[in-house]
Length: 434
Image 1 (tube, rainbow, N blue to C red):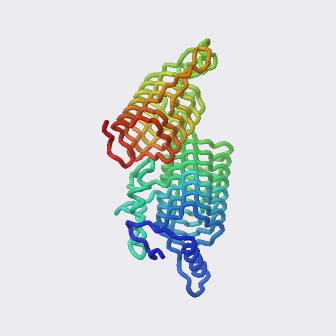
Image 2 (cartoon, rainbow, N blue to C red; image 1 turned 90 degrees about the vertical axis):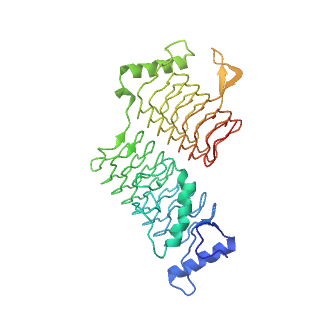
């Protein structure tokens, strides 16, 4: 049987019968029955476990691995979920009132109709002096266990450390439709591309949160704080903003606010693409300032954007096949689902960019009439700065990543078949020589 409190250097593994005993004793503890004991699953490896409909109020789950787990309808009110890994988990209709979710990994989790009222979703840190410091005392060993999460898995989040030294809670791509987040503290949380449509965010604090690409359509925002939040590309249809604090938020720059020359260049380029070069003309936007631009679903394939400033731009679903982005600044850009097949990103800055499910494989070369020639052109990321980038499920087949810096990048599920990795700095590894 695993030890009651795991050591800081270990991960606890539970057989089904052992887990059942822990859950049974916890149920007795909640009811005040003899033989009961609060569930301590700190640092437990429970990936894919079915804990749906369970009563886990007050359970200790510090640093537990519950990725792809089933917790739909589970009562986790007041549970300690500090540093927990709930990626891709089903947490729909769960009760997470007053839970400690600081520094948690919640990317792509389904929180539909969950109750997160008063939950603490701030950044989490175990270092002295941090704003969300773990306290000493009875839970000190749990805190020390969670330190391993702090130093390993969580350290890979795209923003790294926050200004206060904490690890931001990662809700990238999470589904929070209809969830109750009233009075929740989401300070500094990463909600990039999250679905918050119809959610209740009354009184919630989203100061400094990353909401670029998030959907807040129809959300209740009475008294919600968005001070200094990144809201580039955030959808807010049917939202009443009259009582929100949003003046200092960073908002999208729509194309129609960028000047007639840029608008004309993009319009003419799309005509050029659609007519196979018969009408319009190829866009030359070298060195152009497109920071925070709303370029979602734009087609700039084969355009020239060398050295352009696309920092924090909204580029979800954009078509950028064989586009020249060499030396461009794409820091913090949202490229989720974009097609950059065959693109030139040599020496581009992509720190903290979201490249989730981006296509960076080879592009098929076509003749002037649009017919395939049977040849292809590989994407070029030589010397690119990809530190802290989100590259989950990204296609990098045959891509040239020589001399690229991928330190702290999240490459879970990335396809690197045939990629060139000479002297590349990969996550957690020294540079390759060759």
